[in-house]
Length: 310
Image (cartoon, rainbow, N blue to C red; front, top):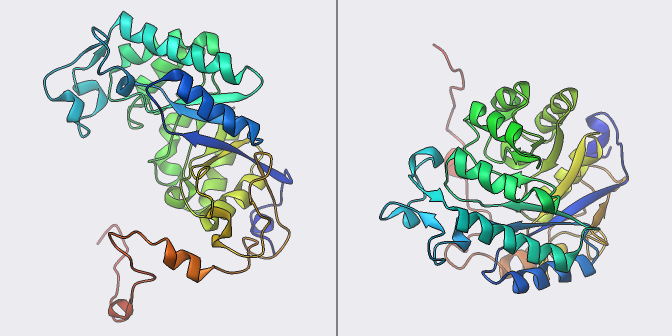
């Protein structure tokens, strides 16, 4: 049976994908890159908008020495503040991009940087005129009350979830109505069935679900079946818009796999593809660690003790 049938059946025949696109400092160049994806048929796009665009802009940031290189300190504790000039710069950047790609396509924003709640609120309010699909991961997901305050303060959908494991990890945000879009990665949130449970739980609370993903067609097809079976699904992330061989990594699926920004839900058993193209996979192994399915017999005699109690 198709995987979607094992988790309750399907609500849709096609899965909408959004093209994630790394940021460029020049908004005109960024707009051109996004426009090319729109012309390929994508109906939703995502770009990075945050303090990485501001470090070299005079008077845009107030930050302690060494803050630019600090990627480990939680957002409320970095001491980085975005000034009015910085907020205006980010709003102007998004305005330029919107003027090129138009308002007939969904556009989300991500990677705002390790900044505290007050700066997040000022940025969110400044971006309201551009009707963004969502603003993503502005705060650590653990800070439920801060997410609730941000969501209440801005008229832009808020989104987080790619780092959270299992439905239990998502409950505080969902129960508090602290976000407008939940954004799990099924490959790390607990798999197809667990993420389906999460989507249904979010739906009962009026919260839509998009899917984070940066992976091969294998994980992508798992997400396709999950998305087909989840009513409040919005869009599936695609991180390989510039990888020409991506669709060819598996067999017996359409080429290209994504057509007009969508993936057709297959009716064939399992995830719907035939096999791996092992030769193609070997040609594109990471040169820093070019291992193709490492030998694992050393695990054959290992045992686990999975209980969380004695």
